[in-house]
Length: 522
Image (cartoon, rainbow, N blue to C red; front, side, top):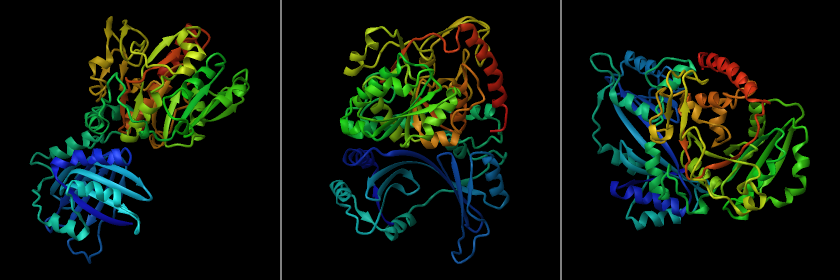
């Protein structure tokens, strides 16, 4: 791959990002945290953190000398020991930097990476195959009077930079404050040596403000706003939807029609694939929907499990059968408003390490909103919802993950500033951040699910498979972000467990399983 570069003046950077987004596609926003550690001879350890991963490379002053320390790849654990080891090897001074990279996939094997606040100011990097036309990219740069340079030109520019070296540890043995701060900002627990899931989630900040700012700059909308932030349908990318289904005869077709009614072109709907997992329903789902399949523009397939295997397994089977990197999970009694898929698609494109959740409004199956003809015209997002994340009455001793000692009301969304202040193991009533990942509707990326090993089959009956999934999401440094501009409708039904008492019994057993799993090595 060929590479060329440009130095972007600070006052032009944000505008150039917006021009690339309008001219090509939405970028993936990536948080990077780099530490250059030096020994007395100026040999370097380049320690780079990207997406909760750590890459370590040794660079000798003598370029002809074989490195005595090999390149390493380290998962997110025991990172304090990494710096202690570097100190013991004589690497005492550091340059520490936090970088925001906006990665544009231009197509034709061409990528543009715009990095803000690197050690060398704001840098644009182009990666392309020799012979590839860069006309549109060059037009944007020429318009802004930005000169393209080669690698030698970049290195000459870097040599003029005088970077101030700091101590890796202070005289009291405390790790450099910037290293601790930037680790927290990108979701890495640098200091803790703990391996249990319970303790890992206590060391994660859910403050996604950095992404929030860039979302507004690029789209012009508010990531947490009630009003739809998205006006440009061209930002849509392919998405897969998983719908586990068990005896949902009265609702499954309505859910499918709510997908068909999305505010997307017919061509864009063809980029959606929907996987229904029939988890041993008495009446096979395919027979229920067969006559209506011609009404749908999207690719639809039904996978049947002959014997009911539980919600977690059905979701996992569906995820395995999906085509796209971006995934939506929804229940078979959920109706999507017409802007849902586009709102979630755009957020997943911009923010790679997150789970996005919309709130719900309960409706009756015979209500006007649940009428097939109304659904086919497209539903507006409800502004009034019946969701525990908005308002909940809590009574002493109420069953939940955390004990409650007094009667009170909680307003989680309001008290946590849209979950941004819900990190570090904070609890409100019986709830914590992990319990915000309620699976009746959410979206994320496949690689996020891969790392979290999907949904656990340890739980039987109602409750806590979603919370345990949420705990793994948080422990892996992923944000939980609400999408208030596109809330869903939930069609009420009697308990799948058979009765409220049976449901409570299942929940009680699952709490014991959940607590045991939290204390195991993660």
